[in-house]
Length: 278
Image (cartoon, rainbow, N blue to C red; front, side, top):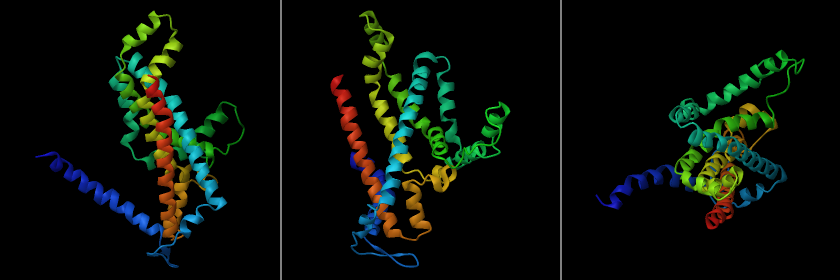
């Protein structure tokens, strides 16, 4: 069996379940939504012009800000954890990696509902704050941007840790020893040797976290409510409630284009510069 034969099943699968649905969404984005649902295909670029309404631009901007902050927090938490697993926790490496992957054993919906239980008025968080005397009455911890951030960091942190672990595991420790023998401090060695060599893991982890964070709608819906509407919630509402499939498709295409542009900019400005400087 040649290379073409090996690639045929993958090509058919991607064509049926990725390319064709994407083309349908693109076609719907230029259509006209009917009053009671459904869509009439045609050429109506006005759907894309509606995206530039200040209300929708605010939601898109909020989405990218939350996704970027979530990515930075996951990187700040995930890098030390991956570093510890690789260089300090050799004896317990397999156990620690297993613990990182444990959240994947349950669905995202269940994990999001768990945070609803924790952050609600009578939840564990408020009970603990009142028990330790931090507050006398329950705080509004849920239906806030902070609640959405906590849920997203918890859900997507493993997506950052695993690529970082894979990159750091290949690291040659003799390079650290050589840098320290030449007089570099541990901090200097980390920033000039360890971190640049782990940049492929940083880039991969950032992409794996940023893309689903920008398209997230379950966590903002459960933990943010109407106060923290993101683009994923807006698209969901257009398809399921407003029945405006054309505008929902236009929003989907715009989000995909913006994400692709942001990722390519990140790779060229961060990844290429780091690789050239090595």
